[in-house]
Amino acid sequence: DWTMAEYRETKVAEIREQVGVGEHGGKVICGLSGGVDSSVAAILIHEAIGDQLTCVFVDHGLLRMNEREQVETLFRDHYNIPLVVVDAEERFMAGLAGVTDPEKKRKFIGGEFIAVFEEEAKKLGGADFLAQGTLYPDVIESVSFTGGPSVTIKSHHNVGGLPERMNMKLVEPLRELFKDEVRELGRELGLNDQFVGRHPFPGPGLAIRIPGEVDKARCDILRKADAIYLEEIRNAGLYDAIWQAFAVLLPVKTVGVMGDHRTYDSVCALRAVTSTDGMTADVYPFDAQFLTNVATRIVNEVKGINRVVYDYTSKPPGTIEWE
Ligand code: XMP
Image 1 (tube, rainbow, N blue to C red):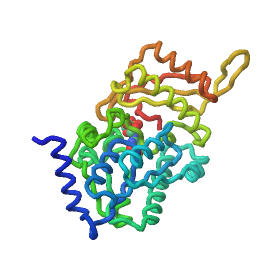
Image 2: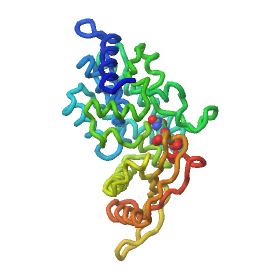
Image 3: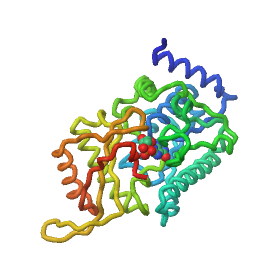
Image 4: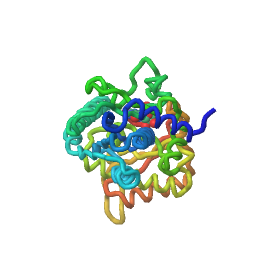
């Protein structure tokens, strides 16, 4: 039996041993996603080896509202961890232009992400180690989210392949932990409940929540609708009871009426599910008044959306994300 405080101490010692400290210490680079796992890994490693660690956060323009600013505040201002933020929105949007096939979107984003990360590592003069927030379930089951081991339903976006290509060794201090233990370790390291309890967010980001072609204007519309939906969920005290909740922007326009004029705008779908591991999921049963209220706010406040629908599909047969 061990406590999280002991785990923290043990891991700090192990990281110092693996990477080395001081004059002969190695350099470590860590890609942040904004999620709990990579954040906890980075904070722990920084505690062990200080500024031998540099974090890289790639802003691909497919993030949620204020996500980049939150990462900057947390890492730069709160933890004082060296952080490089790469503004790659234009290059991702250019590459996504004309792409509508879900797998092509995923492949492009995964490949481009690795390319951007490699370029940044080079600019930093290279590194000896790559840090990753790999968890125990990732170690035992590498296809943890596809819904089946033999068929690729969706290609997973991660930085797999990078360490070999860049000739770097891996630092993975969370390899023995389950998700709930990572959250506990995060709290032990000073992260607040709101941060450690955040819903999962996929690597390809908003691109897989915009069926059809993705562009900046559509990302901006979706970000606004999603933020309103999550604000209402938090205000209703429902956030922690839900595994994942998000808005989806459909490539369908319908007719509506606002005041005394006709509108012709996009449809927004809302998704919310409960789950223990993302492999199966049940629809979250909001009451009708809650959904009516969210729909009203989105249509009134977000230019470009004039209709809101709720997704009642469990997984299986649906997947959690729409692409
Ligand atoms: P699906 O849509 O397959 O998603 O039911 C199951 C869980 O996995 C997340 N997801 C991803 N996470 N990279 C990730 O890191 C991805 O490419 C990816 N695709 C889906 C999804 O948000 C859900 O939690």
